[in-house]
Image (tube, rainbow, N blue to C red):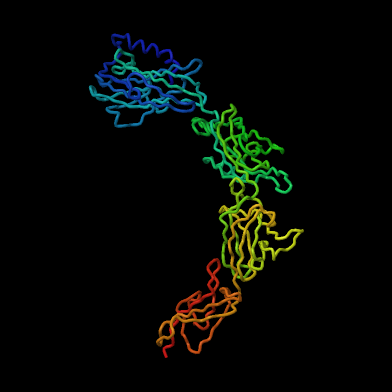
Length: 556
């Protein structure tokens, strides 16, 4: 049975009794060599916890009984802060250990029943062996609830002696230790945020609902200004959802209380540097530089007021968005990059530098497109030019004056490649090869050569014919012995004298003597040297127009 209320006043009496009693009462047992420690101290111990947490100390008592019936009662008293109570806060917990010796039984205070762990705030230790040292180790727990009054609680752990089973009483030799427990308020003030910054609301919500560490995607978005009309589109460029944390970096207190339970935490978001506007989904354009959104730390679908949206304002640059709690304390920040018009194209390359004349074998020109600040652009338009539009039939306009085609009064117009950004970080623009020959491919920022403020370095694409105008056959030797291995090389050229590329360049060849089966060579691994089809083209590879046959010469 809990006795804390009775012991609050008794704590002072115990302390006085231990100091002034000179003789044991008639009912006191004869206890020899008693010791009592709390967390290793025989005088004082202290703990600090938060509402909802549990403080635990180790209580060790030892003594030698003069007779078998002698026993020791270990108990507590507690003084609470003004207006508070110690009721139901203390209990002992015992797990059998080698540190406890010669103990016959442990019972509750005065009941004679077995010690019920986690419910009793006192216990009696007895032994069946007289004059043999007894040592007992237990844990004493102070279990603060989420509503326990904050402040300092003074717990006195002390002993009473019993002789031959009579009522335990305090004697001059009994011991006591003071344990102070400081209970602090739960940490519910928002001191930080885990932010989930993504290009879509669904992605941001996905990470927020996982309660993962911050997932701030490197958002790069268009500044949202039409380069021709100057109009601002106010495009939603980033979505931010957050989980609030206390000073311990936790979304819940030690008691398991969500720090944003009840009324959701209100966060202020401000664009403190650079371009950009912010608002929650309930705010309409024109959008502000400062707004509020809420955080509830739940796994439910984010409400409109719980999602912060970052909008473009027509200006390029890096936007810094800073977050503040309800007290105005900064608790985090993130950034979004807004890009301007294309200002350069670097790392220009081709997916395939030699392409056969076939609609299924096109090439792609690739480049990293950046604005004037050096930020990689993901949206916008660049223009593709080719020095010979006979070779590159589509995907590029001509940069050669003799091939200019008048279009709306302009000459030398390029072909627009819009929003060609791919995940790998570069742009891709498709080209169709139409004729054998070479062409230099460049990128610019305008649809005419004259109007372009910059032009990239060029890369050369080669188109090769899809039919052979000539074949040449050669051998690795001028003469062979009967049955000797020979290497036959067949070279095909197109009309322009470049390597021919066509899987049907020839389907058979004739020889006035049987050369036997080919054992290796080119794209053919079997069949006869005379009848095996010739294949000289390798998609995305190097086209040489050359095939080889490794055969054995006739034996007679």
